[in-house]
Amino acid sequence: MKGEKKYKRFSSMPVISKFYGIVIRMLIVRPFVAHFHAFYENCELIVGIAPLRVIQGDAPRRVRAMVIEWAAQHQQELQEAWNRLGRAQPPLPIQPLR
Image (cartoon, rainbow, N blue to C red; front, side):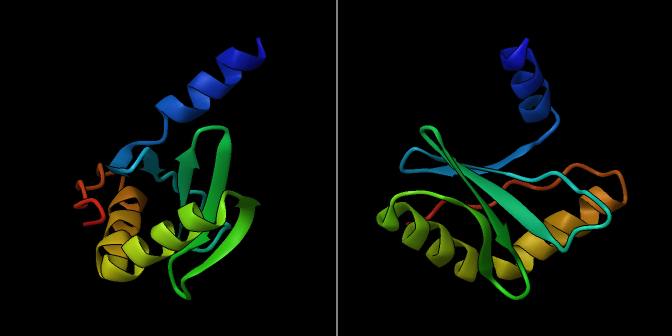
């Protein structure tokens, strides 16, 4: 049952990017600031878009650094993805970290 809840949660969170085993997903939740979720193995980070910062979660230092580097390169696209979700439109894919 727990696994089913987790699957439903992920299935409602569109994937917007993938790189180095990190999966970036976004789900709009009205009372919260614009943010995205970064998943790596069994770790999850919730990252605010403006200002760009880790709000919650834990991951290896290198993963955190790559997620923040990627988000800094694509901050405007992340904000637009959040805005699209707010209009009930799917977010556009965002290029991975290079």
